[in-house]
Image (cartoon, rainbow over all chains, first blue to last red; front, top):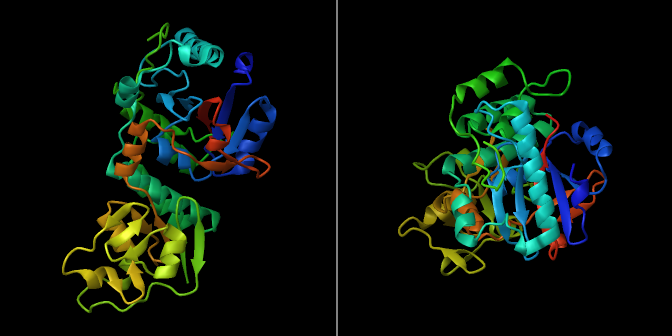
Length: 208
Length: 146
């Protein structure tokens, strides 16, 4: 999807938030090899960057500085009523902006200044930090075959960090297609009501 | 035996917590006591005259409560973790502990705008660090199979 933005000064690090490497493997092998795909079994990035769903993206410049803090990779808010066309347009706008940055670097108009970037940095609470710690403990137990203990810990994680679908969907039951998208999940989506789930993607041309 | 996890390591120790504690204190299960050597190897923190230290940071032992934190060569790591506002979580049997990072340092790091570093494997098990790609613009993007 990002093939058009390849450049020697630019790269994509795509990270699978998957405890089960084999679940991620077919997706990776089918994808373009033009970018590097890593596996994050413990969701370390959720903890480091305060992420809570996929896809979420961060733009990092040549010096290792965050120039666009965590936001969705072009997905409009799930709690808002957008039609398919608008959602597709949002994705395209985002991809084009990435392409612009890949090409123009620091002169790209899509970068935030330091003050604005700081304002957009997501604030982590003690509950979220505790949820991430427990999640990693739970993942360790699950890998060790202690699934019942892991399950109890994951339930605590979901209470501590109810907005995290990274935690919920990773640990919930999967359907035959490997998706954690049962009735309970959609009930969770509905229970958000009209609450804004994502920070607005502040980007020229972005619909919504 | 006790296993101590950090964000980047898993260490199995033959000797468990089981360090003497005062009879009216909490149950030993609630505390992770490690030798000074294990504490330093696992966490990078160590006892100095100024307190519990790592790099330039030292956390002094609360006055009058030294016994709760240090006994001989043993350090109550979970108590120090709690004192520092970092999560120390464990299984019900206290045979696996995880020493996590607190919200404060996480927020400080994100507000510094320096992208937090990490090292993760690809499908073939090769490790990649964010710092390997310094000098390039990096779009870091997550996805999942679920």
